[in-house]
Image (tube, rainbow, N blue to C red; front, side):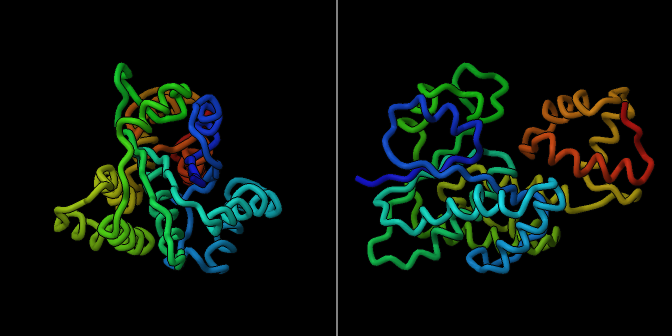
Amino acid sequence: MPTLHILNGDSTAHSFRDTGLEGDVLVWREVFSQGPLIEDISSAEFWKLREQWIGAAFDEDPNDYEKTVVRPLEKLKEPYEEINLWFEFDLHCQANMLGVMGLLAKNTSLSPPKIFLICPESFPGKSNFKGMGELSGEELEYLFDNIREELGEPDFAIAAEAWKLYVAKDADRLEKWLSESTFWGSLHCLKAALEANVKRLRTNADGLNYIEQSLLDIYNYGYKSRSEIYQRFWDSEKIYGMGDLEIDIYLNRLIDRSLIKLD
């Protein structure tokens, strides 16, 4: 049976090679938790916007974006009978998951694939579980065998509404929807991630959002190097799932405002 595994990031892909799971692999390398978005993810405008932003934010060559992000998406048009989505509990992964589900929903095939989600919030024996990138191939197989859930029409309806509100970046509308929604289907990590996004969308009296204020607090507590700040932020705010390049976006804003000066 033709199977596709969509893995959120290269760290998971590295361990996935050690599993005994069959099928093709698509490594998702976008970061929908950051930067501009528009609702129509299937449009050329969407991917051009992302290419331009990624290039500017992370100093990437547009040709690299085409090769590592856009071209692999051609696999989604192939006639797979089963697609497995490997996405974690944090905002980084959940935003990417919504995007992938939006792309899959555009599939008008008369025989759509069965789509499954593997989304761990924790792992047995790991008290501070941060993501699938820290798991072995055997442990990834354990997740596949024990927590995999098939997604249905209700899940895709929830994802479509969540994506629309997420892209709009309206904290009040998103918060209202989250408070009124009582059914989350198999998307059991989505609400907490979007609640973290609401906190990020709002700014305080000093014009800082939640992430910027958290980083400033860490700095003021005495951590003056990027590596120290990264670690303290990961320890306290793993719900955001941010890597060092993403954290740098917010640190650089604080530097530009002369609120911090790093070693």
